[in-house]
Length: 342
Image 1 (tube, helix red, strand yellow):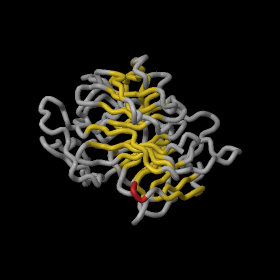
Image 2: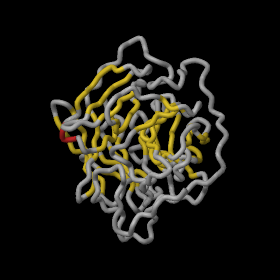
Image 3: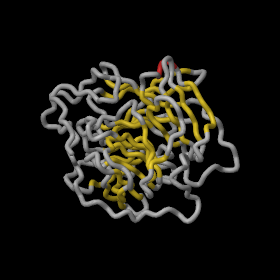
Image 4: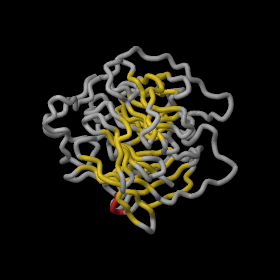
């Protein structure tokens, strides 16, 4: 299955409200379509669940279940991204304080990510430079990143100190690079099969990504440096979040008759959660039009639900029980969420 090529001047993502965005126009020497990059044979699923602390496919949070202490209620601090004629303004929202600008990603790139602590964001420019900004300063922390492929987004480590990205490579198994946010310590940590829309688990060990062919999702193990194909993921063109233990993945699936999209990160989509070991889908017990789901570091799942005047964040525990509902600011209704901070 092949993706539809982007036009030379503009492209529109089917899930995005930003229907007038222009994509990498006039850059004939830079690939702007996400072709089937990775065609290596499927890896055998060798990753198994630990003997303790792993729940079944019916759980929505961490596999280990709830802890004895009640988690602190979500406050609504989040990082949002919008689109305008000059690019992507990235802002951090705090209730009582409002929106604070973190910066603006240039409109010629879709390859960006916000840090889990909500204080920094990273983006890749068409010359392959990995930038980090915090609203006041900006720094190039690495060079040689793959650029011009919208889905090859960088991803922050759970402690917001490192960034993983894919370098330029013609190999079926792409090298996976990690750089410190201050520009030091760039190194290769292994070779990955799932490189599109990377998500990093809160345990720091696992990264999940789509293969680039929309047919596979792989989980990369930072300790072993290897990728394992996740079961149960077919026709997937976006990975949004990964459970803290790396076992459950939030993805965007689509039907065989639906357009695959162009690899651009979607602001809104109906989420599906899949247990990567069993291949079973995990029910999301929330009514309404769901438009994304995000795992918190403690295993709770936050489901974004669309509303007429504002969207709502619904927080579930590891058993799928609703813990909290939180209204988003009305201004963020048509924006995408890069991070839910706390």
